[in-house]
Image (cartoon, rainbow over the protein chains, first blue to last red):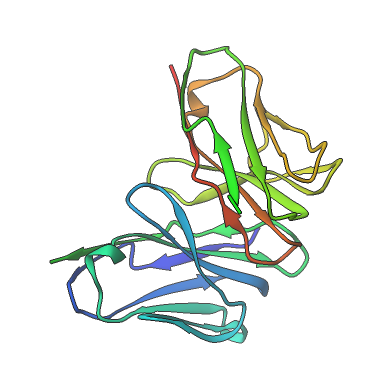
Length: 109
Length: 112
């Protein structure tokens, strides 16, 4: 199956800092999503972004499908940004979403 | 819309017991999914369904069964609970294949 690698595994930020999370995947995909899992365990959709760039407030994401990676940018981080960020991908010929292991982000006040 | 709902929120089972995790969605989505998340890990797909009456195995289906008699409901059945099934279970739905998936709040299961 498709392999999904996320980096870094852990990230500690001071409030107000910017950061970039990376997701590499091993094959062509037709679906790529970024999720935020908050400290209470809820999974929140951030972006559906199989290619291109999208922005939502302080968050933005870019997927370069031809080079098989996606980046999630967090600007002016806040303590509420803490949690685990997951990248998940779905290949062209399947309906199965494969998740990376996640990046744990801790934002300190 | 309530979105995707799951019951119960938390359950403790003894080894060998059976239970059904309930999942319902009110968005008229055709596709539904069950995932498990072990501590410190990403989610793994257990089963999925592309419509009422149609189900298929995911990455880790052993020890589980599903049914899809209606568009709204997608229950997950554990027949003989084992400690290895201790996990958090998430249900999700999407309008179609390869579209945004929306997740329920999860069910935390502990098998002792």
